[in-house]
Length: 229
View 1 (cartoon, one colour):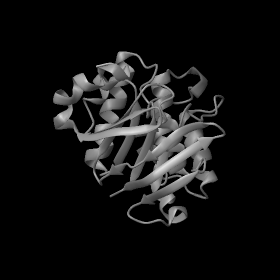
View 2 (tube, rainbow, N blue to C red; view 1 turned 30 degrees about the horizontal axis):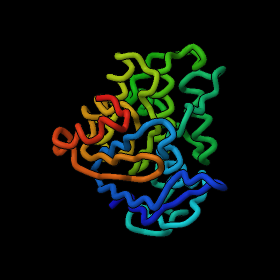
View 3 (tube, rainbow, N blue to C red; view 1 turned 60 degrees about the horizontal axis):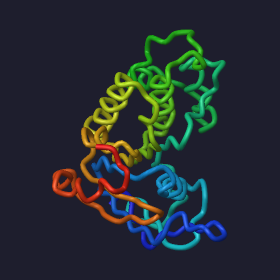
View 4 (tube, one colour; view 1 turned 180 degrees about the horizontal axis):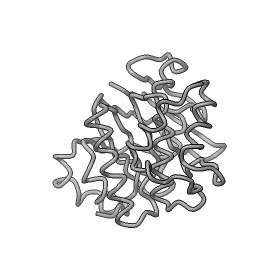
């Protein structure tokens, strides 16, 4: 397993954001975490990445509780892309290399090619489309050659062509680089094109996990969640 949680809970005063969540993601999965806005998707991802602490419960990464070590094997894009708008795509990648202590930038051209931004030249990221910004954010998350990629609503707000670009990129990363992916969304119909496994989260509770082949027979059960299909 790449990720396992046991009774993972997050409580803010009187509000329970996550309630005893047990999630299991195997190596090679593209795992779609489905739920309405406010269901707990981002909270779960932030705990996994170490951005916030859980109230109680356990997280295992790569079947180990040594989270400091194994979080180095994670790339993540949580909420809005963290880009410097006055910089080009190349300059953003060089800057993030420096933050990670990487002093030579031989990976930059490869990452730009990988995400389809090799021809953006001197164009500043403030002038990028949302889809281009998302792809650059994913490129930044790949700088450390992660084994596990966590993406929070990467297709939210994208036009159809932008959604297709992200979809094709995720499939490429999974098949060619053997990267396991956790992707959250409230758009079930789009995730259906890429995911191998689903988790359904509602009001902080992970109410089901199932393989993509079982989606059709379970779909009617979850219409009441407000998930689009």
